[in-house]
Length: 223
Image (cartoon, rainbow, N blue to C red; front, side, top):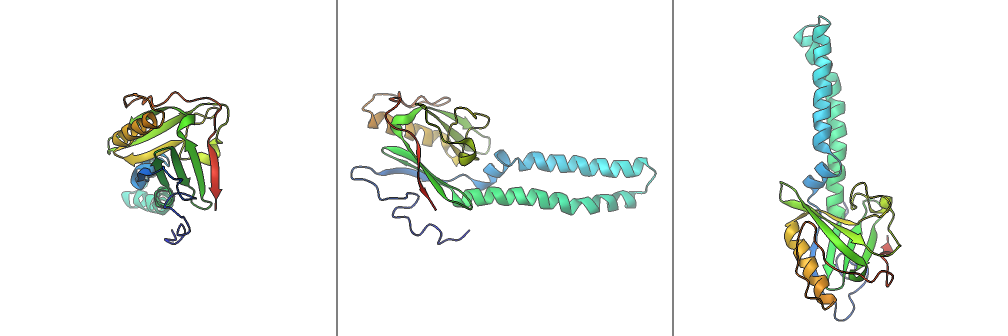
């Protein structure tokens, strides 16, 4: 990735300078190894190719071939399998390098996109609730359920979206480190912005009762 690609940003991760009174509470990005596994399924892909290679070797042996012939048959397929896995690993790395999530005192901002950078601005008042899913590697996903009728298209958000929620898409901070801490910070920030005494929680994190049609999530910049 080009390290100078986002030098134009007035504030890192944001398309515009913050208004007076608004400040950044947290910034983070997906851990690329984790998003490669969860979004691009590199683990499952590795198992699949291992089974294919084992089946190929077994077929050669069952047909009367020698161990050397079985190894040669596997050797022909192995580079293709490794190349396919490498492509998806590289995709995960690229997502990790180009994504930046920001939580301010008033909104969530998602700067995403490998080729075309898009920045999504999600005001607290349209966030109805959030859910936290933690993973064994210490990362987690924070999915945001939005109020109102307007939605961001699933394909525009992917992979930063809760899987299979196509009709009512849920933007998702994906594979972030210390996700529980981040979820609690978000809950506290929304409660503070709305003057609520709401206590932060997790799984799911109920973080706000949003006014349905006051505002909608929107793309605020494309590069």
